[in-house]
Amino acid sequence: MEKLGFIISSTNNFFDFLIEKEVKINEYVISDSNIFGRVIGIENWNPLLNDEIVLRFREDLLSFMSKNDNLEVATVRVLGKLDKEMVTNAYVPPKPMEDVKRLTLERLEKILGVRQDIDGIHIGNILPYNHPIKIDPYQLIEKHFGVLAMSGAGKSNLISLILKEFAQKDLGIRVVVLDMHNEYYKFARKFPTKYISIDSSDIRLPNEHLNKYILNLEEFSEKQKQYLNNAFKDLSNRYPPSINDLIEYFNKKDDSTARAISWRLEKIKEYGIFAESVESNLFNKIDLLRSRSLIINFSDSYQNENLMVIRAYGLLEELLKYRKGLGSIGNNPRIPPVLVIVEEAHLLASNEAIENSLTQGVLTRIAREGRKFGLCLGIVSQRPHYLNQTVMAQLNVQIFLRMVNPNDLDYIKNVSEYLDQTDINSIPDLMPGQAIVAGLYKYPLFMQFNLIDQELKAGYNSLKQMSEEWNYKNNNDYQYYQED
Image 1 (cartoon, rainbow, N blue to C red):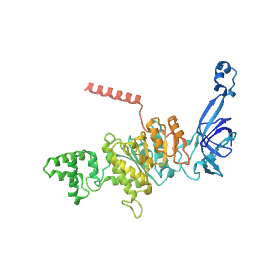
Image 2: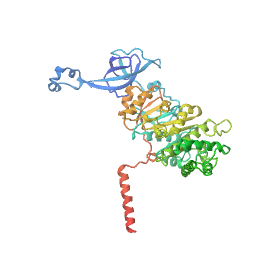
Image 3: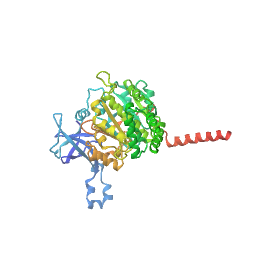
Image 4: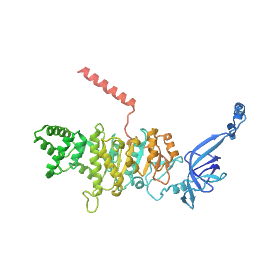
């Protein structure tokens, strides 16, 4: 191994070494006593310039000082000790004057626990080595993962890379994407045998949870809620009753409360989200997972948060039931294992908003027990501090791209057991596409993710393009009306 310098000071958790050869931030190094760690800082200094008296003659001294008078010192965060290729705790710090060497990539991968015997997915490189790393896709998703970052840091690019790798490898796992901004529809065009894209407005929900749905779509007084409960009891012979059954029931009653409920139910019916019979086309959509993955465009529900929550809840609830064995074929669930990727997850599992209590509840259940049934979560959010803590705590793989919001950074510090303060301090300095991947290996890993193919990239227009497009259309419309 290449010698980089020698130790000048040490504690149980850190050591400093004088640099003799080039060293980069986040490189992994090892001492003569086999204590290894990651370089977290590099300082340039000159011992002469530490003396206040000498500083009085700074201008004169600068003309005599050479480059060799300046020293570089690297600070290393101690991660452990290597004992016959086994990693143990470093109970005793390395001694000053011990040599420090650069860990080879082969040895580093063994320490991290990177498996070489798998046909893994390649979505990025180890930093700062720029060395590709193979990731076990099952290890990534089996115990849920989260992608957390500010806008523009590379969340959509990373999800696109995962979707592409899943399309190109036969993993026996289907993906369901709750696509809030219609960013991934191009995958259905590029991989038509792997993905199908549907609008959330095309889904008709079953009537099984009708009571929950209507109470979350409209405001009802306590008296009206009691009327509704009585209606469901009276219609128990039609279980589950449809929205039409309820409207018919209240239309037969001649009092103001019944008429008010009937009016609200008619309004709910106009949304067109419920099946007209006991059967639901949601079941048909879920059955598509037997052959292809689903990209569900929720942008058509995005402007109505209640509708978005209801549709997402109905989908997630049925997916969990299906994987638990609803409609199973023999001893097998009706659909294969599923990874559910939830974009803008803070909208569906927030610590603060009560409007998403339905989706917050089902996502919490999936986070806690979904892995036992082959239902895995991929949580994506640009507002981590709004995320439900139970959901966040169940994300065993956490991918942090750039964030600068102090509330988000404090939240990560409180809920992530993988990162120490030095790691958290580095998050605001990450460049687009760079990330700290925690929980996938024995230690947090700094990565640079690849760029997705242009043909699969989310089709955002720049502000300039949007302005030019509006002006062009507006001028054409104006000329058309002038000619009329």
